[in-house]
Image (cartoon, rainbow, N blue to C red; front, side, top):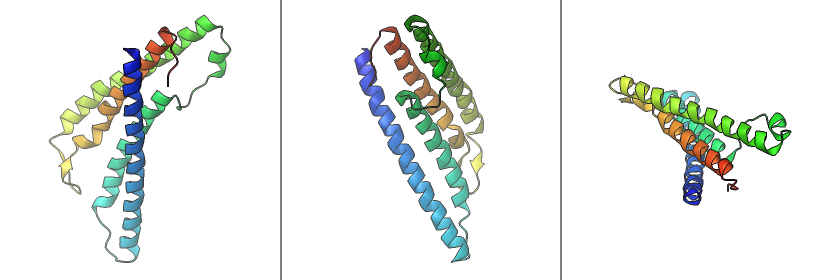
Length: 161
């Protein structure tokens, strides 16, 4: 079961990174167009800045989720690595439980934000404001999923890939 979870999470993590990279490239192109339109055409697109902020929310949070899965997020490991094996295992599990709880909070409170703002519209884009908050519960769910994988791998002494 854990090997299936690991394989699934590896694919989801890669999709998150590709999604984030695409969002970053798209944002760069839109900002380039905005600068060109402002200074050359004297006609700044009203939607570009707000759309880039929306994109940024998505690609940053999904990249953060992939960072949790790949263990490339910031962490202080000097203390943890200096511990004997059993206490180290406990610290690793507690750390992932904290990240899991944070992700669960993102899901819970993020869904509340999405639902409470779904009927409001972003004027320059004409889309529901709830879309601005949607990456919080989505990436929070990934935080939970990826943290759970790390906890199970640590408990069963399995190497993750």
